[in-house]
Length: 376
Image 1 (cartoon, rainbow, N blue to C red):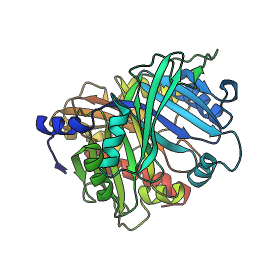
Image 2 (cartoon, rainbow, N blue to C red):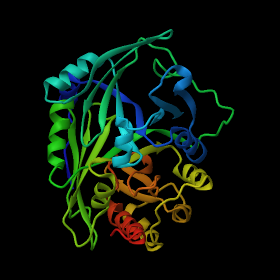
Image 3 (tube, rainbow, N blue to C red):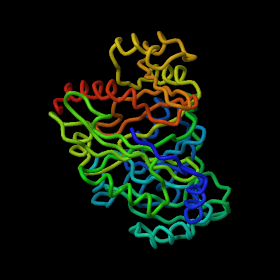
Image 4 (cartoon, rainbow, N blue to C red):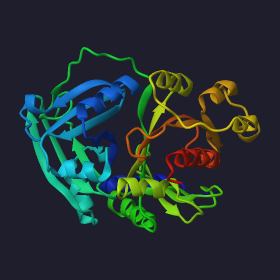
């Protein structure tokens, strides 16, 4: 593993032209927004926030917004056939369309990005209602994914103009998810370094970690990955590409079923992974499992940890350590019909890394799922 230290000078240089304050929201294009929102409420502990559709005067799309702590997910469906959104759903299945970035000045962020080579998704636009105004602008990134810069300093509404509060009688308790830790993109073989360059030059990100096929491989499959981070470290985008192997890797499978590059998984943080995963399992979320032998040598590999290893083994939670501390992580099975996007639940206890010591066990678990699907 190679690592690059982000210096204070690097942070200042990045934030001079592209200060990103955090993840604002993540928008999914889905075939049935109402059912998708209900799933995320019922199974993952999100609650209702906002709605846009026919009742708000939107004749084109229907969107439901759910939230949990700092996480906001938007589920959008077309209201008529032969739409651009419908065509993307037909091509990709349900998946992430927009990774929205919270900024102080959306126009400035957009102009900097375009000036550095980004392709425009839409120019800065002012959206107003009785609660103030929001300025948004968008650029393209890998595949059909876009980044939307969101400036909301002059807005105190529930979500965005055009949305109203979604007051649902169905209230659920949180499972303890706090914020988006990182989001992983899968791109075609040979394209990883192109997108690393994009994030460096267009958004001012720095590469903080790099993994090659010696780090991320099993007997059958392999991939390569580079982790990009913005200056303040609040936004991290690992980018994967497949590497040659004896069989079809998880990234190859994703690219085949998603029909191109896209978001592979969203990692969401918790302060108590045992409690969170226990709640998620009780609500029907299914997770990848690793063999018991993983836990037989866990103490030797990671040293002393606060958690009871038998509890981790029962749930299938993985542990890894770096120079700063350790982390706990677990991965769901795919959450839609196609074997594409999934979630990672992560708890960091000082560690800033991404679980390199778990890669082999994780990949073997993924391969077992691929074998059951007949796609390995």
